[in-house]
Image 1 (spheres, rainbow, N blue to C red):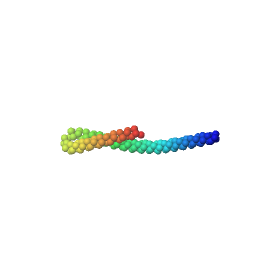
Image 2: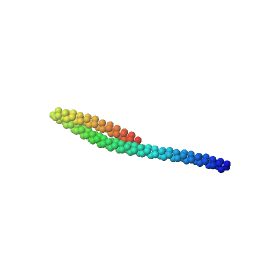
Image 3: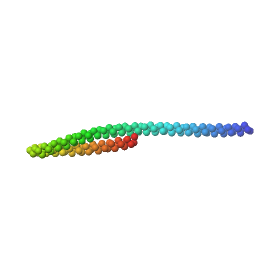
Image 4: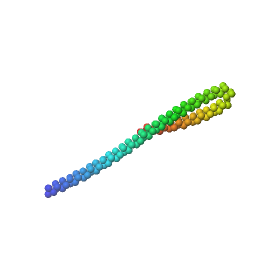
Length: 140
Protein backbone atom coordinates (compact mmCIF):
# COMPACT_ATOMS: atom_id res chain seq x y z
CA UNK A 1 0.00 0.00 0.00
CA UNK A 2 2.92 2.27 0.71
CA UNK A 3 4.16 1.78 -2.82
CA UNK A 4 0.76 2.61 -4.26
CA UNK A 5 0.63 5.90 -2.36
CA UNK A 6 4.14 6.74 -3.41
CA UNK A 7 3.29 5.91 -6.99
CA UNK A 8 0.20 8.11 -6.87
CA UNK A 9 2.25 10.91 -5.37
CA UNK A 10 4.92 10.54 -8.08
CA UNK A 11 2.23 10.40 -10.77
CA UNK A 12 0.66 13.60 -9.43
CA UNK A 13 4.07 15.32 -9.33
CA UNK A 14 4.79 14.09 -12.85
CA UNK A 15 1.49 15.52 -14.11
CA UNK A 16 2.16 18.81 -12.29
CA UNK A 17 5.62 19.02 -13.90
CA UNK A 18 4.13 18.18 -17.30
CA UNK A 19 1.55 20.98 -16.88
CA UNK A 20 4.32 23.35 -15.74
CA UNK A 21 6.38 22.46 -18.85
CA UNK A 22 3.35 23.12 -21.04
CA UNK A 23 2.83 26.50 -19.35
CA UNK A 24 6.50 27.38 -19.87
CA UNK A 25 6.31 26.36 -23.53
CA UNK A 26 3.25 28.61 -23.92
CA UNK A 27 5.13 31.51 -22.30
CA UNK A 28 8.12 30.94 -24.61
CA UNK A 29 5.81 30.90 -27.65
CA UNK A 30 4.12 34.11 -26.50
CA UNK A 31 7.52 35.77 -26.03
CA UNK A 32 8.63 34.66 -29.50
CA UNK A 33 5.44 36.08 -30.96
CA UNK A 34 6.00 39.40 -29.15
CA UNK A 35 9.63 39.46 -30.33
CA UNK A 36 8.49 38.92 -33.92
CA UNK A 37 5.84 41.66 -33.61
CA UNK A 38 8.44 44.04 -32.18
CA UNK A 39 10.84 43.28 -35.04
CA UNK A 40 8.12 43.91 -37.63
CA UNK A 41 7.13 47.17 -35.91
CA UNK A 42 10.78 48.21 -35.74
CA UNK A 43 11.21 47.58 -39.47
CA UNK A 44 8.06 49.57 -40.19
CA UNK A 45 9.27 52.50 -38.08
CA UNK A 46 12.68 52.33 -39.74
CA UNK A 47 11.05 52.41 -43.19
CA UNK A 48 8.82 55.31 -42.17
CA UNK A 49 11.81 57.25 -40.79
CA UNK A 50 13.72 56.62 -44.02
CA UNK A 51 10.76 57.82 -46.09
CA UNK A 52 10.48 60.94 -43.91
CA UNK A 53 14.22 61.62 -44.33
CA UNK A 54 13.83 61.28 -48.11
CA UNK A 55 10.85 63.63 -48.06
CA UNK A 56 12.82 66.11 -45.97
CA UNK A 57 15.73 65.93 -48.42
CA UNK A 58 13.38 66.62 -51.34
CA UNK A 59 11.70 69.48 -49.46
CA UNK A 60 15.11 71.01 -48.66
CA UNK A 61 16.17 70.73 -52.32
CA UNK A 62 12.93 72.38 -53.43
CA UNK A 63 13.40 75.12 -50.81
CA UNK A 64 16.94 75.74 -52.10
CA UNK A 65 15.67 75.89 -55.69
CA UNK A 66 12.93 78.35 -54.72
CA UNK A 67 15.42 80.39 -52.72
CA UNK A 68 17.67 80.68 -55.80
CA UNK A 69 14.68 81.62 -57.99
CA UNK A 70 13.70 84.26 -55.45
CA UNK A 71 17.24 85.64 -55.37
CA UNK A 72 17.27 85.89 -59.19
CA UNK A 73 13.82 87.50 -59.25
CA UNK A 74 14.90 90.07 -56.67
CA UNK A 75 18.03 90.83 -58.72
CA UNK A 76 15.90 91.28 -61.88
CA UNK A 77 13.50 93.52 -59.99
CA UNK A 78 16.37 95.60 -58.59
CA UNK A 79 17.85 95.94 -62.06
CA UNK A 80 14.46 97.05 -63.43
CA UNK A 81 14.11 99.59 -60.61
CA UNK A 82 17.58 100.91 -61.43
CA UNK A 83 16.70 101.17 -65.12
CA UNK A 84 13.45 102.90 -64.20
CA UNK A 85 15.41 105.45 -62.17
CA UNK A 86 17.71 106.08 -65.13
CA UNK A 87 14.73 106.52 -67.43
CA UNK A 88 13.10 108.96 -65.02
CA UNK A 89 16.29 111.05 -64.85
CA UNK A 90 16.60 111.12 -68.63
CA UNK A 91 12.91 111.95 -69.03
CA UNK A 92 13.11 114.95 -66.74
CA UNK A 93 16.21 116.32 -68.46
CA UNK A 94 15.14 115.75 -72.05
CA UNK A 95 11.67 117.14 -72.71
CA UNK A 96 11.77 116.35 -76.45
CA UNK A 97 11.94 112.63 -75.89
CA UNK A 98 9.20 112.61 -73.26
CA UNK A 99 6.66 110.61 -75.25
CA UNK A 100 8.93 107.65 -75.99
CA UNK A 101 10.33 107.71 -72.47
CA UNK A 102 6.84 107.75 -70.99
CA UNK A 103 6.07 104.58 -72.93
CA UNK A 104 9.34 103.00 -71.79
CA UNK A 105 8.69 104.10 -68.21
CA UNK A 106 5.23 102.57 -68.28
CA UNK A 107 6.69 99.37 -69.70
CA UNK A 108 9.36 99.29 -67.00
CA UNK A 109 6.78 99.99 -64.30
CA UNK A 110 4.71 97.10 -65.57
CA UNK A 111 7.79 94.88 -65.58
CA UNK A 112 8.73 95.99 -62.05
CA UNK A 113 5.17 95.23 -60.88
CA UNK A 114 5.27 91.81 -62.55
CA UNK A 115 8.64 91.05 -61.00
CA UNK A 116 7.40 92.22 -57.59
CA UNK A 117 4.46 89.80 -57.86
CA UNK A 118 6.87 87.04 -58.87
CA UNK A 119 9.15 87.84 -55.94
CA UNK A 120 6.18 87.73 -53.54
CA UNK A 121 5.00 84.39 -55.00
CA UNK A 122 8.47 82.88 -54.78
CA UNK A 123 8.87 84.19 -51.25
CA UNK A 124 5.54 82.63 -50.26
CA UNK A 125 6.50 79.32 -51.83
CA UNK A 126 9.88 79.42 -50.08
CA UNK A 127 8.25 80.12 -46.72
CA UNK A 128 5.88 77.18 -47.30
CA UNK A 129 8.79 74.85 -48.06
CA UNK A 130 10.64 76.08 -44.99
CA UNK A 131 7.58 75.34 -42.84
CA UNK A 132 7.28 71.90 -44.45
CA UNK A 133 10.99 71.18 -43.87
CA UNK A 134 10.65 72.27 -40.23
CA UNK A 135 7.63 69.99 -39.76
CA UNK A 136 9.51 67.09 -41.35
CA UNK A 137 12.54 67.70 -39.14
CA UNK A 138 10.24 67.57 -36.11
CA UNK A 139 8.76 64.26 -37.29
CA UNK A 140 12.16 62.71 -38.01
